[in-house]
Length: 296
Image 1 (tube, rainbow, N blue to C red):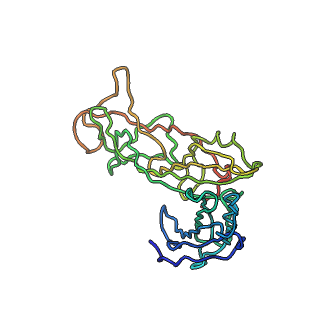
Image 2 (tube, rainbow, N blue to C red; image 1 turned 90 degrees about the vertical axis):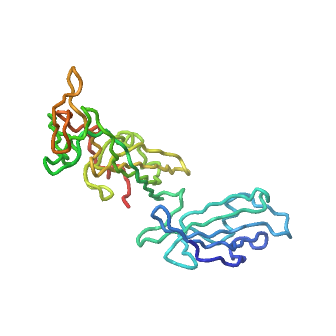
Image 3 (cartoon, one colour; image 1 turned 30 degrees about the vertical axis):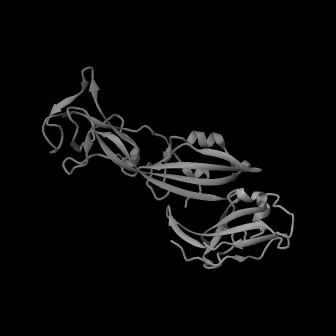
């Protein structure tokens, strides 16, 4: 949604003798997407007709609009400038560029920084449904055992619950999970690739992002160099607060999955898997705080 269109007008800032910076007619949009409130302003920067000058680079174009990181939005000072997106306009060559400024709510105590500066952080989350093999579902009698923190018992024990398999073959049931991507910039001195690689496939040993111990799984990290001495790392955190990343499995012998008539609970008659247990593919717990991830 938009706050409305504004007449275009020349803005102050930069080298006004050689270049013109105007805020476009459709500028100052407001949006709410991916759980983020944003305001945006759009500018066109171009060389004056009275000069033969061209824009040397895109950074020079950005200097003409008079907006810096952390500056408040002119309509709502609760929002501050956190990102700049700019490109030359193809049909005008280097004589004109389009610049978009992204504003987000200011949080007291935080200093807005640019996407190439140390301390920059961005958070995204996606919900997902994963379909998993299931032999038992939760019931009142008997209840299905969910081990604390997702630590599967050793030796194995039957998980209880109500039998829903068909002659030992599991059914596919949806499992709701979430995937967080936390982007942070680090100085090269604070970047430890070995520590991040060790963390892949481990779970949290304490509450993290508001999720209980064992429910957050560290996925694969991605890192790139964004500036001199600055490394951008995308941390992937997969959360499963229902099964704590465990999966069901049925005990088998040389003849296949062991069966019993009637199964467990009151979900139906027929042959069902006799013994179902939890498997935890990610048994290692670590302190995610050691990865220098700033929790939102």
